[in-house]
Image (tube, rainbow, N blue to C red; front, side, top):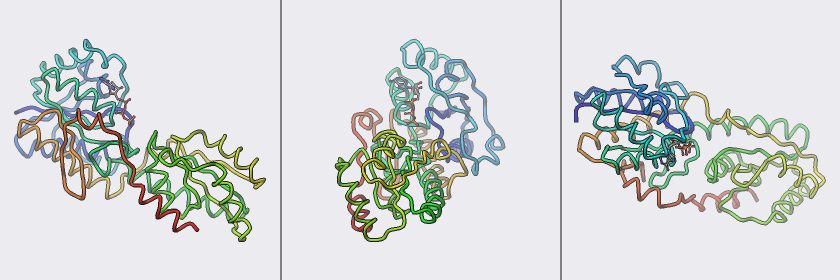
Length: 319
Ligand code: ATP
C-alpha cells in the first residue's frame, strides 16, 4: 500500500485532530502518501481530497473539532453514493482509508470494505458508546467539561439551597452521566441502562433534605429524556425549588485532554499499522490499556455495555 486517506465523520469529538495528525505523520514516517478527505463521506463523494504533508497537521494536536471538518450524508447511504466515493478514491490512487467517527460512520466503512475498498475505523465520539473499546476519542474531554460545569453549578446550588437537574450528552449511553456523577459526587444519576423508579429518586431527595442537605444535584443522561420536563416533575413531586441546566454542545468542543490526545495518537497509529499489514474492515480499540482490533461488522452487531459496577459504587458513595 502506497497511498492512504483519512476522514472524520458524524459528530465531531475533541481529539479527532490528534488522530488525523497521527495518521498523516505515521503514514509519512513509513513512506506512504496520505490524503485528507474533507467533510466526511459527503466530501468523499464530491472529491474534496488533498494530499497532506507533515506540516499540514502542525499546530492541531491541541485543538478541538476537526481540521478535516465533518458532515452527515444521506446520499452516501446508497450503493450509488458509495460507488461514487470509491471512484474518487481511485482517481487519487488511494488504496486504503482510515475513518474516524462513530457507529454510523463505521456502517459506511463496512459498506466500502464490502465493495472491495479497505477501511479501518477509529472510534471518535464523546458518547463512549462503541463496543470493542473501553474508551472512545473525546469521551475524557467531554467528561472533564461536564465536571467543571457541575462544580460551578454546585457552588450556586449550595448558596441558594436548590435542587439542580443537569442534562448531559451521551445519546443512548449513560457513560458521560455516570462518570460525571461519580466524579462530581452527585446524589443521583439517571441513565438509560438503569431503570430506577422515579419514586426512588424523589425519596432520596427528600431523605437528603431531612438530613439537612443544602443542595441536590441530579445528573440526567439525554438518553432518558428531556431535562426541562424531568426538572418539572421533580419540583412537582418534592416541592423543592428546582433548576435545570442543559449543558448542550459545550460538551463537544474544547481542547482535548492529555488522555484523549494520547488515546487518539495510539488508535490512529494502530489503524495505519493495520492498513500497512493489508487488513481491512477492522475497528481499532483499547481494552485493558492494550491496543486491539475487531471486525467492524461484529462491532456493529453488538451493543455497548456500560460498566454497572460504577453505578453500584456511586450508590454506595452517595448515601
Ligand atoms: P456520532 O455517534 O458522533 O453521531 P456517527 O458516526 O454515528 O457519529 P452518523 O451521523 O450516524 O454519525 O453517521 C455518519 C455518516 O456515516 C452518515 O451521515 C452517513 O454518511 C454514514 N452512514 C451512516 N449509516 C450508514 C449506512 N448504513 N451505510 C452507509 N453509510 C452510513
